[in-house]
Image (cartoon, rainbow over all chains, first blue to last red; front, side):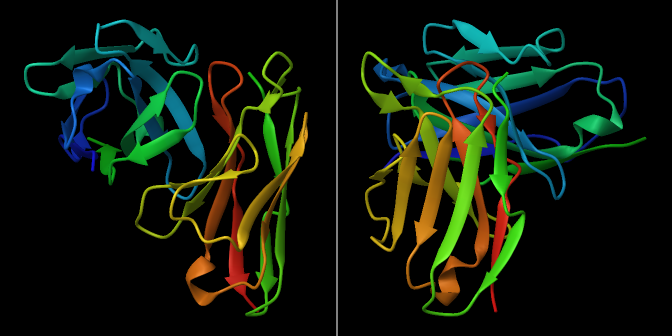
Length: 119
Length: 113
């Protein structure tokens, strides 16, 4: 049973860079079948897709965030990461990692990690 | 981006009664060559991540009770919960994966009347 677990700082200062890691267990990130996404949820609000990465390192970002986002993959550690630059309070959200096949629904989600942007 | 609009924003249903949630996309999510609707439904309980219930608009994810069903095509979709149970209290989201970026509806909160 594949499981995902997000990790990272709960509090980040404005203008800094947020770095989160998603650890994959129970399966290989390198299987080639799946894409690995980051999705966020602002407090009390809806869901926003940030982008995905493939095991090869190819990425696809939401145009609304592409100028501030970088995603990386570390197949040796079975992890992928999100780096979001130039943070503002509007980036305060729960950040989820999720798995999906190409052009398919998100069928496995991590538990999420709350990130607050505040000085 | 495809805009997903759900209705209502919230609804209260008696235990054992039917709950119906609607989702409308700003453009069709039906891929003609496969005749599949690129539409999913999720359930989110407080403090938990979303859980996939339905994909391809009407295919139930493994382990999802059969009281949950999805229907619709093109731009108009419905999630139906027949015989609402206490454990179904949650926020429900529709999501299109027809085009990038994938987008979600604003959510519908289901509570017990």
